[in-house]
Image 1 (cartoon, helix red, strand yellow):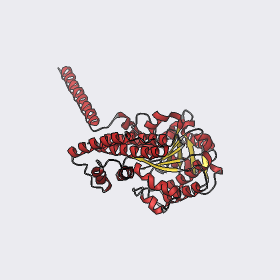
Image 2: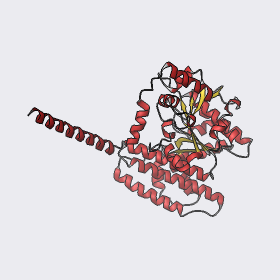
Image 3: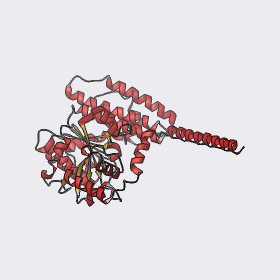
Image 4: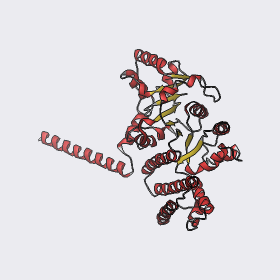
Length: 399
């Protein structure tokens, strides 16, 4: 009798456990959480591997022999210490520069120095940032010697995280570089927000080319920041209008090559308007985040195609540039598109106990570049990878 009661209770517990598991999985799926996201959370929140004294010595010895040590983060310091990066980057056409946190002055300085190196020593001519796609026009006008102040150029970036002294110094350097070189460096944003700059690009193009005025009202709503995303019926109507606008522009392709470049840029900006609307037509925040990264990857491709596959530097937060397969991150989509033509370099400054930064500091390394593709199997790979706190699939710079 007791055995039957035990079996019956066990069955009920099994059924309840199974039902709860199914319920949790259903809720996770409904709110947009996928198993790929759980992999990233595990990487971020898992406790670093505990290394014995002997294992730490092994890891430290390997790091001392296999990292690239930079002497300074300050721009304008020459490139002797950076030359080993050439072998690491090799023939890559895209270098994605990440950062552990925005508004970190050290990260911004080292990125300025990386831009100088990649432009001067490796012929990169496009710099694209996690900022509005439509912000490029006035910034490029400044970079190419136009009558625009660096402060006016910086204001185009909108987000406070980019309107910093370090970014302004980098823009000033690019302008000075362009003034003395035939190959010019150009600037782009690849994000889908905010889009009022994109609306202005399209509106100005239509007025300059005597195009239709059918879409003026909706474009002006965007430009004056009066567009209302909360009205779902209105949002659906705006989506239809923007799709019609894209079709109209695509049918207006000019014959002259210079006119075609200007037209192509207007078309691209109109497509970013649609991306923005499609993103905010999704109620689920997690799905919205995923589609943002997909759209950013699509915009990077548009920029590279627009610039005829010029060598391109990307700049964004580490979670966007990671190329972990199935993660839904921009870097993962770009890896599918470009394969080994892209190199990812994350900037890491997390000094928590057991972090990579602490590991490098204990090894006597200050500003160091580590190629994760070179990690050997065993304790070195395990200890370093788990200390990152996120998936670093290629390069990492610890500050």
